[in-house]
Length: 332
Picture 1 (cartoon, one colour):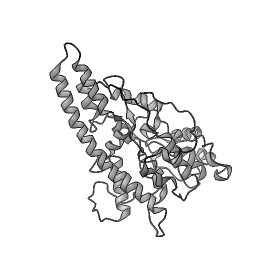
Picture 2: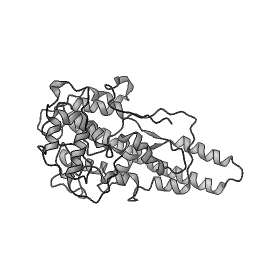
Picture 3: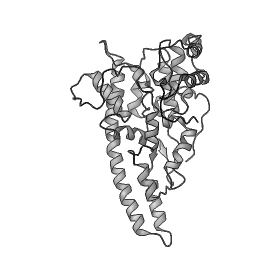
């Protein structure tokens, strides 16, 4: 697989024909806030799958295979990334909500949105939903892995029993991934995103707004699975290098100054806070603010003239994510 390195801002959103049919209604969504639409378009034109070919082969050890799908391990990249997500949402409130409390399907829409938000971050009784969102951004190509097993079997002195074990475990893991992906599609695409879309045309007062689509405290839902084709048998060892090249795979938590929310939405809105990973202190937040470069596709009337100075002087709403944390920051 050829990993695409992107520096700076990509051009405007791609033609609607470039996207799956379910995405197209969102392309004409009328946002309420300045900069929100261009932020959405920037994400769409950035978080795209790399081109792949049909002759790829992926190999894996039994230990690496089990480790990649062991999302309960605190050292798993998904777990580490989740610990760096901002503590609170940006476009609605979580005040008084307990993510571990049971919630009925007939609960108020605001309660269901909060439940989904928690689930996508792995904070609810269904943490595997958050892992499914990570899997969508690191999608192992099953056919390529099967080719790897076949290639191993063709080698002299191969351990056929080991290959048989790996193949059996892999197929069970793929069944689990498929089930998680179906649930994620139902809850993120058909509920969370759909409710955000419908809120644009609603005449009733609602805690739901179109800007929830660009909510930076939850990982983005790629319009397609983003293939991950490891070159070695140690899959997890290659995750960080890929995130270095494509920071959106980890929701920009290691390059927050490049997050489209920071580059395209923040410069247009006075009463907002910048996207910072959980655990940064005031000094680090200041460094992040200094590193933000406004999207050059924003027009002068859209920009607040002193937008960056406000963050450097502290003249913005307090950000609860700037509290002290034990999470180790690994800026890339």
